[in-house]
Image (cartoon, rainbow, N blue to C red):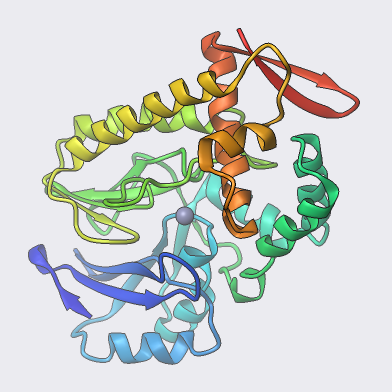
Length: 311
Ligand SMILES: [Zn+2]
């Protein structure tokens, strides 16, 4: 556990795939500690957390899950068992958490979704297989306390951060923003359109970034990578990044209809592994759908396959 400023502790947990780690944060609160995010539910997650929390004076009062992605929600049930503290998660986020992690037919949902966006059948199998790798390591907490943006928990304000995940939440107190995967330093958070996500995640994200810049936080604690000393500046960089990517997406379209899968090649390159291609297709799609809403592209559907042309 690392000690940061403002009495905050950081716990860095291992991930078997890139970026290789995820940060959880242990925050001081009015009545004890708040643990934010839990890491993957790896077989040793509980012992790992027991070691990390061993030196902590005082009780863990709340466990907050920022969003339902496996590296954030995965060990929530382990941590709740270990500490006896209740888990709190966003209302919308928990709905999506149950939808994705409880669904027995989720792989089939993904198969038809990738097909619909132009992914060839042999590639689809690989992409879906990659998506189930973390499934055994998700042990979320049933029926957690539900949070909404604007709530307070232990003196921390709950702030909406949709885009990377529709229902992602952040915590804010005294200029310290626990940013989860809303703001990252060296990498840009993935913003993808997935089955069961809201229709315009990139539009949600751009709006949320504007709101984040207006918070004037002095430091942001991200889910991966180093602390961010200029959260508003980083939010504006991410807006500029996605505006440039929208331009590149238009440039990759022409008069001939192209699927999100096809457009993902000029945008993300030809050499991606299946694990990365999944995210490339989803992210290309979030940009294409934003362009349709902004009048820069047209969407078409023929024989169950969606394609796009420049407007
Ligand atoms: Zn995430």
